[in-house]
Image (cartoon, rainbow, N blue to C red):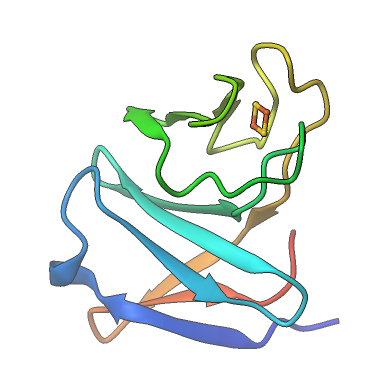
Length: 106
Ligand code: FES
């Protein structure tokens, strides 16, 4: 099924290490500028479903602020306990210098 693209913000407004949370149809989506690459994941840790958007960023890795599980923003893979399940990843497109995120995971 084709995605619906949700507007995020102008590309120039999302500097390296910055993030935005977009309301998706099912749950919030976290969009991050990870060292110049725009990546998007579910804004929900797979450990206890808490939001990830205030987690520390290290390149394309984010650490959950609650119990320090770490996730890869490219693959959604859980890299350290207490999370073991991956988080969903979403496609990004950039059109006319605007960032859009897919409304459903890839
Ligand atoms: S809620 Fe994220 S590590 Fe526990």
